[in-house]
Length: 400
DNA sequence: GCATGATCAGTTAAGTTTAG
DNA sequence: CTAAACTTAACTGATCATGC
Image (cartoon, rainbow, N blue to C red):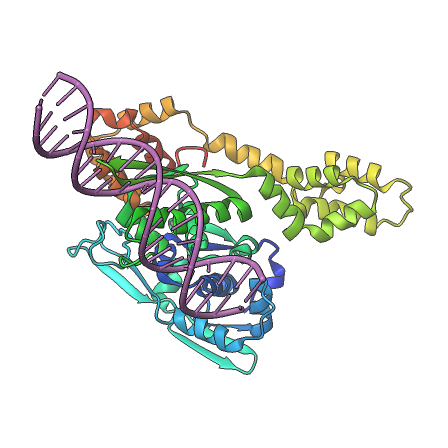
């Protein structure tokens, strides 16, 4: 069997199930980073094998760490064995947070739970770790996941910030978390009930610094609003959007720095190089660079050659520019709000209820939003609410 | 020394109660 | 009804502990 190696993949992103994101809430900064790297390393062979290996140097490389404190690493890895991932597997298959009094927790549902890693072994410089079968199934094709960049995660210095980042990513498509009560917010941030009992401290020491750090180091922009009941801040709403500039920076610094160097060496300006990579994709540009490299004749003006090769897709190669593919997907997926309303109105009540089951399975927080706004799927006001937009996005009937 | 996590004291703002 | 007094929570500044 062919085993895919890390080097064969260029994008260092890990698909992380939202059940895992929530279950990681009490983990340390390093533990969370390691868990993501281990999943990234195992992912290509996740279904094929239960035991995966990674060298310590590879792990440190993916963590962007230079430490030699192996005791600390060992402790953090061991911590993963006591991290419990819990999710429901009943008809509704809701994902729950592993805290008993959580709103989503329902003792009538069937649920599964297991530790993140079922075993760990260190042989010299090689770490062997094992995922249980149920977890491998859950993680391999997660129905609702966030794509976490290992490069961005390595920049985080605070556990609260990385927790906020991962949780916000799950809400990126909706653009907002909706109004979360403080208790729910504390849970997702991993703030114990004994800590920061006064909002002023929670705000100043957890919320604000975490937002500041996420906005500084990540590819998303987070703002927050609070709602008071009487004089007490009782709800927090986080608004999340893409941060375009940083995505470009990330491409420049992380994935394509070699490619940029080559393009600049051939005489391209920084802006031109950046524009090509962002517009056409790294693989496509590399392919055109290879044309110059493999050319039997001397190319007098490589940049002019590249420019034309890129724009006219010279050599009829297999890879098409990403921009065109993305455009097709975009046009295919996009539906207007009116089209969604018409479609929704054409459904029977039974079909609507089934869809709600599907949507809450994909995005459990939908239940909380609906309960909070006191909206039911069969209500007439449902189609005019922001929940409807969220609902359509969850069902992938919008341009996500 | 610096970053981060945690807590406290004084001040300010806003809501509630009560005396006139 | 009104305004002063009271209560409560947020804001701000400061300090301490811990780990790197």
